[in-house]
Length: 633
Image 1 (cartoon, rainbow, N blue to C red):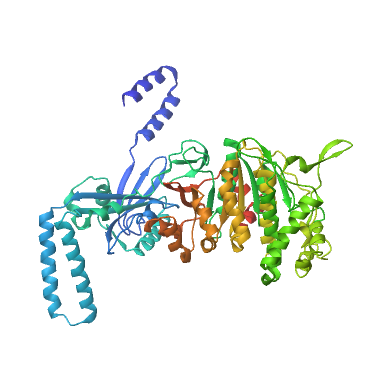
Image 2: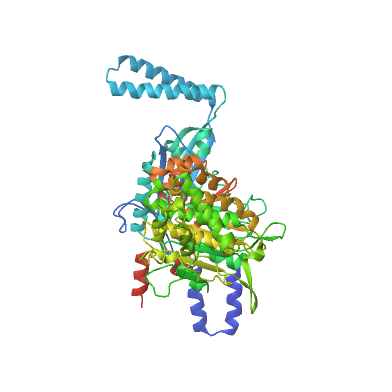
């Protein structure tokens, strides 16, 4: 009041009476306290018991308080996650009051209860009641034993939930949703009707403790611990890329090149629609801006085109539907630099990648043709193609030839060139016709898309993408994903060890279905650290990774794991492989899109991938969003 009086005195000397009157009215509004009232059904339009808080500027807000009681026999870390991580129109506060119980008194009560139950059990004949009583006796005896040896301590505990909303309807909607979800895990809520105001005050620790004795229950120390949110910790990264917010609304920074990590590799698992590609887009764009990381993306469904184009990157569409489609040649070989700065040609690795592609082509039609002799013959013809027909060896100079204009890079061999050798080999007479289907002589342009010289150039952009969206799902798309990945490895990953790079393989489960491809991808995870490459496998097929040892090898070589919403059929396996608590597992079954658990080595946190508004409309692939955007004037 002193401030207002002093201010008024100054204004009275400078302003006329009308201005002073207006200021007086404003002062009375600003100084007016908010109103706080408990409402009952029928009172001033109320349809339920609630507390109404209103002021002169923000309007009214409606609060309803619930007293919780645990009806289940067990608790787990994260059991209150649906409340703590609630999102929606309303707000939710959870208050837990804990006070020590007198051990001697409680043990006497437990012993008395056991004696009563045993006496009743002798007179009871109904099978269902007998079973219930026997179970309760076992639970009480077990609890009494833990208390006697101090394995557990007993606490009087109350849990109070307060839900608020800007309208009664929002209050009802949020309350109904939470009560249903928590009821499913054994937590029941009783509305503090006729004493809503007192219950709200009780949640702050104000008022008489005796008013809410009925809200307290006995819980052992381990059960009380499960009610607190200690389980998710947080990341210790204080630099890197801001990817979102944790459950405390603290920013989550992530740096894949943090010196404490064994390598910079990552994997992303989640069901369809969980937000995998959206998360990758956020990480990619911000990694380029904040850390200068270059990224290559193998795009199965043309989901990343907007991102690449917006960042002025190169984007190739391996599509027979377009006249000027791009080609990439599986026989391309590039020199690379080892950790000692020496330039060399890893011809053996290049040959293995070509061999894996050819094996896959044959396996598509007849796996029985891949006998030991056939595999050896394919290897020999690849070696013959490079060494004898193109003169390419492990010497980097072998990749160049002298012309009138000086030394120029050799034109690489193609699938058709190799096919000509294969059809002359006596051990490949039954295999060559299959390879022919994938060449220009096969008569099917959609299958011959990888027969020819590369026409796509990465350039110096921060991001590039290769789309295989228009290739058929049964044959060419799985083949295209592997070929594009191998080509990016040669042309991008092996280059410039000083440059931080990331290679993203979406729908990576397709590469786990064949041993050669799976082994190649695992090898990339093993070798990527020395090349300064972060391999990132994105998949909804977690179970596919577990079928083969290469999948487990990838998981072990990826310190960073982003787990988004999972299918119920997979959650038990996911929880076991990633050492998730029961609460974390339950959380991943109901997490909304873009919400998940980020595990970086031994650290773990809940994270909500948070885009800006511009990023959201640039990245979204939700057809409803796209319709809404087109309809907006």
